[in-house]
Image (cartoon, rainbow, N blue to C red; front, side):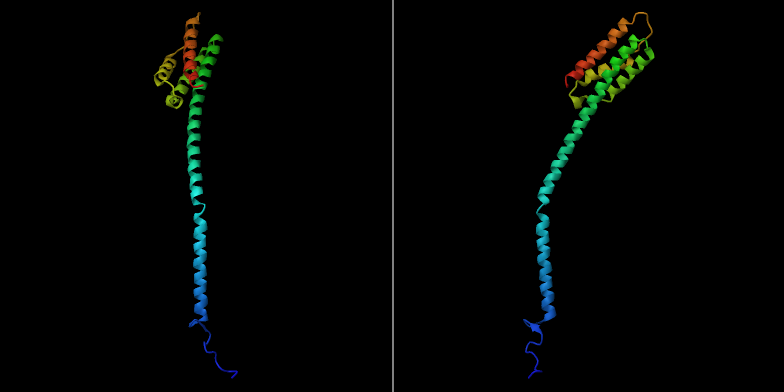
Length: 162
């Protein structure tokens, strides 16, 4: 009886061993897939929240950078006017006129809304600077006073947001 065949003939639950191992392997793969999906979905809400916060921070930083850029334009324009005053005193009229023109250009590059400035006042100052022309004269007091008044107006306008 040593050579008698097994009653199952290498079968488990009426199926061949290969079919049982294949089915168990498929079930194992499906279980691992389910676990992977569950683990993968876990951090997604936190990552989405982090991404949303990063987008908000970026928008705030860009807004702040734009505001600072506008502030810088205004401060550069004011500095150029003060330097033009020094040039008038030194009788460097060409340099003084160049600085006044550059100051007007800087003011034209500003966005008054970014600094909550009065756009009409800013445009008035810019227009006055665009047409301002320092001429050689024996008495420069009138031109110097007019340039000083424009610088003071710009300083007062920018001072509102300092």
